[in-house]
Amino acid sequence: MIPIFELTRQYTRFESEISKALTDVAASGYYILGPNVTAFEKEAAQYLGVKHAIGCASGTDALLLAMKALKISAGDEVITTPFTYIATSEAIVQANATPVFVDVDPDTFNLDVSAIEARITPKTKAILPVHLYGLPANMDEIRALSKKHNLFVIEDCAQAIGAEYKGQKVGSFGDIGCFSFFPTKNLGAFGDGGLLTTSDDTLADRLRMLRVHGSHTRYYHEESGLNSRLDEIQAAILRIKLPHLDEFNKTRQHIARQYTEKLARFSDLLTTPIIPEDRTHVFHQYTLRLNTTDSTQRNAFQEALREEGVMSMLYYPIPLYDQKTYQNLNYPASDYPVCEQLRHQVLSLPMFPELSDTEINMTVQAIEKSLAATFKTGAVSV
Image (tube, rainbow, N blue to C red; front, side, top):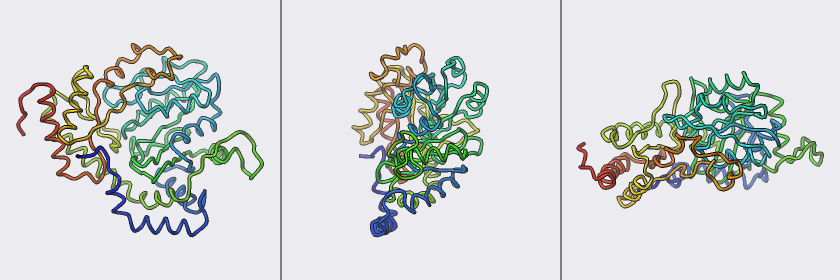
């Protein structure tokens, strides 16, 4: 079975370095916010082109800390996408603010910038774009709107570390950028981990204070914060992998190009990822759109792929406005026609840097057979 992602191959490559790092951390006696965290923060800031990088316990915590640092609270609204993982909106709700969802662009799956302004109200405090699947959102338009309406910009970069918009890395455009180091991410730890980025000295100071219970000095608490600290073990592992991140991302792009070239002959049945010329895609996911609005066909295709020995994943079958936890917001699905289409069409293929050419070819062959079985078409010649 070809997995959607596989973690042990990368571990094997770095096993000796990781083993030494783990032993060194264990022997050092520094386990939380120690020298590896400090070094990783400096290295990450330099890589991302920002003044400050602040480690925290997870990508979700990064989003919540951003809300708290910007003093987003009850009565405030934050505009974001409904086509993403719930952590994005969860942080807004945990800050006692209200998520306001805007439909997405049919090509990039990111926020439809042309629809944002109509949702801005006197209560709007921030725009929170998600660089979905590893493709940057349209940051020029988002920043222009934020300046026009005096709004903060919080970037959700959980899936897009290393991606660039007009030559500038994501996480360096907004007031705060938020990253995740969940093990399956492009830069993955051995557990949860997160990072916040900013070039604002005051915000950086607040974020560092908020991640340790709202305290600059131990036992003196200026406000209610969180216990959200990046630990030394995760930082040590991330320091080993960070110098290889560009290589990982280039390999993902190479795999994506192979998929796109080999799947071009099926263009009547599926649409491969579309990448605007002004940005780079780091392919946290390689996501197809099946040219059908019938989710039962998409689901049948996914099952056919599994029977052919290829795993795939559905991100995201239930848009956020349709989640049970947000039913009180009364957002009608009719307000999100593109999102409603995507939920029935998208499917993500195996994608990780260690995926072999043989596995790519096997995946494409499985797609051909599964398309024929699902849509009752004849075989498409290579």
